[in-house]
Image: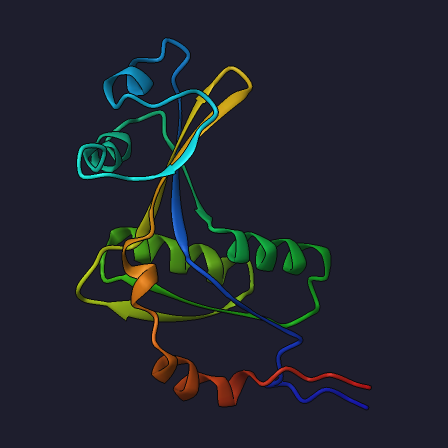
Length: 162
């Protein structure tokens, strides 16, 4: 059965996260925020300033992240001709705009809900040698609604040939 041009092969749902990665071999960032090497945790009020600090660094590397979005990107890379859609919620901010642009650039149909209440989710990835420490703030990702899904699912119904 032939696939219609507007049909999607795979749909992903998740917490879109804007990853901000820096190298910290002298452990200044780890020590400043009392982070342990190799840990993965959610941000606390005391660690929230890390995102602005890392964003301001010249040596940062930024990329779209979150497990579902990473999976969608991997699928699109492995099967470039396939049509992939991704649902999640981002903030109305520069990180959300950068994340959207990156997703669109790789050919994924980003069906982002935009939150005015919270910023785009971020993850500070602090690398020391071969180890990394992750500190996530899901922020607007938790604002995703079923109403957004319902309003956008009609155009992204997956096509499955059985």
